[in-house]
Length: 300
Picture (cartoon, one colour):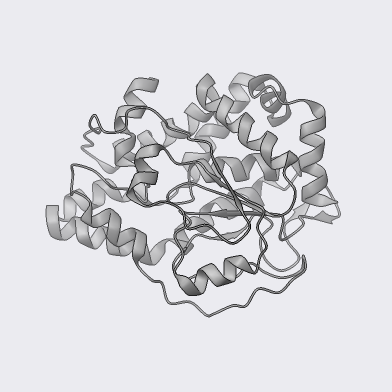
């Protein structure tokens, strides 16, 4: 898929928080962004053994390390918790903002384009620096692809993940992100709109650096479907009401994740570079020191 085609079509994705699109206008996107999902309240507990709090207004916010002991990494280690968080757009209500303040985040890395940010800017936790590294930048308002089937939408999502490997511009953005994550001090959160595609690829790379198993990486990736379930169901109901059941079925693949999406990127990486290490060094241009900085943060 060409860069121009992907960028002209990304308005479809503008999320997969999805949809600020000529398909339905802004109503669906706004509804999906603000729906409150009822979850058990959780108070942040200082220390690396604490699970990330479950937020009501930032529904795909979670710890890269997982829950409990954290994902097993590099043999007998476990990922350190409270180091890197992944999320959808950081637009918390007052209660969730107070919870985020308690995590003492040092940096927020926003991977959204200017068009996405214009829909709703981040609401920053106290003391956190804001860094925008726009992936899928460019003109996002020139139209969108016309899908005729769910399979076509799935292929689009697979092509997006492949582009994280094949597109030099996107590789440069991921290189910038990983370098800054390695160098910044204190806990950080990285996010896009829905917290599943750009964020999902970043999580894959970080967890791979720490030698998390393929099965755990994929399981973590697919958790977005659980965290986004209520908001995605509401969005699909809006699409169904406006355009019918067939349209909802066609666009459903854009809202969630499927193992074939991430696997498409992994397969492209293997074909082009042979290994994650070669992709990081040859594709992203990262030096060994940066990679070791990240590994040290993740598992030491």
